[in-house]
Amino acid sequence: MAGVFQVMAVAIRALDKRDADPPDMAKLAKIATAEMISSKELNADWQIAAAGVLVAIGSHLPDLMIEELFPHLSGQNSAIPAMVQVLADFASADALQFTPRLKGILSRVLPILGNVRDAHRPIFANAFKCWCQACWQYGVDFPLISLLDSDIVSLLNSAFELLFRVWATSRDLKVRISTVEALGQMVGLITRAQLKFALPRLIPTILELYKKDHGAAFVATCSLHNLLNASLQSESGPPLLDFEDLTVVLSTLLPVVCINNVSKDGSDFSLGLKTYNEVQHCFLTVGLVYPEDLFVFLLNKCRLKEEPLTFGALCVLRHLLPRLSEAWHSKRPSLVEAVRLLLDEQSFGVHKALSELIVVMASHCYLVGPFGELFIEYLVRHCAISDKERNDLESSKEAFSSTGAYYALPNSRYEVKIGVGCSTELRAVCEKGLLLVTITIPEMEVN
Image (tube, rainbow, N blue to C red; front, side):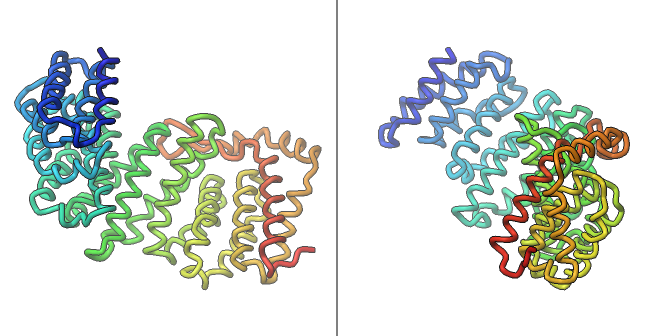
């Protein structure tokens, strides 16, 4: 049966809109809906395929498809989660047609939201995430403010309040993760007054996910990025958070930079890289609003000489330096001095991050002063390390793992490792850095 529905969905999507006959589409929608409500089982292959038929019909006749689902969004109907999932899929597939119909959907879903069982809450939370993402996508092509009238904002406020106060505190980790992911998409659509009121509890709720696994850390970081954007860069008022309010967030994020160094294989690397990028987005969002405070914060973390914090701060400085060069122009001597004090650090991970930062500093004319030659010498020295010296150094680092190679995030169930294979990578980074400096930066003179 699943195969039949899959073929039907492909055929319907391939139709020209003029050929999508409403009576025929209505019959197919009823067949697909009847199949979906005939079982309480969720996410069966045939049920997913039937949902695909409804989404395909919605691409041509959205009102017809939605009206077919609405009668099943009431009372104790066991098909409600499946219907909500269809609406989530439709929002992801066709944001432009879904978003203008958001008010009607929210008015049907909100009355049943309080009675949703824990087992079904991730489905509803995912739906709210998809619906809000559709709004943001719609806003790329059309003014979002014209769509979000007071009724829709009120409905979103009510949904946000329930998810934030009840679902986000669930004992079920899957519910908490999916809820935080949904809240991260909703924060920019609710009123600033409600967001300001929620911040003191919402931020700790998100940070709590860093105690879990890498997947939870990625979700938390994405939600934090959206939260920081909504709180700091709104056109409708001043920032809702002072820099002092952000220090706990930034201190939590710095060690997360290390996640990108855990694995170079498969999905772990992909997830780590995406998390790393989101962390950098978070720091940039803060830096655009509080550039001087963030600069001082990062330099202070470097001065602590705690490997995970130093490594994270160097990575963030490297990323932000080209983007905040104007705001940080007067801070050049401070950065040069902080980097100079780290040249004797023994960690391969810090060596690599420091080398990458020095190359970026060179491209922004930070090395034209008295320490420029010292920094270039640092790169040359690590380019010239022999295989024997490299092996000796790696052998001497066997105690590294007991003295800081592994770092457990605060209260976390997982740990990250800095410096895996860094000797070879370090030499490659320094070689490429020197090449870049010599051929692209006229101000540099390398002897």
